[in-house]
Image (cartoon, rainbow, N blue to C red; front, side, top):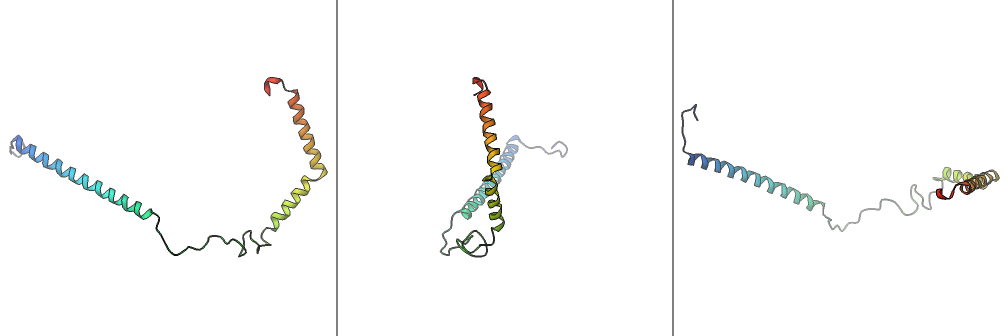
Length: 118
């Protein structure tokens, strides 16, 4: 103002400042309203919609091209053989004696420990 040699009364400056503040408040209010509308639209789009058409099942319950149903005999062969070998090993004499030694060792260690450790 001093450079341009223009003077204003304080009332004019105050009114101009008030107009600026009102416009800024109006803009921020409009932005908030827009954001609320966008959020409401997003929530509406995520609500459950009633549809008459039933979607197809993700997995067949029996048979088909794989899975663990009645029609798939050849898909689990490797797992069956490994399971059978594991069961044979666990039922073998060596595995049973090793398990028995382990149990005896653990029970002996517990009997040797003082009372306050138990």
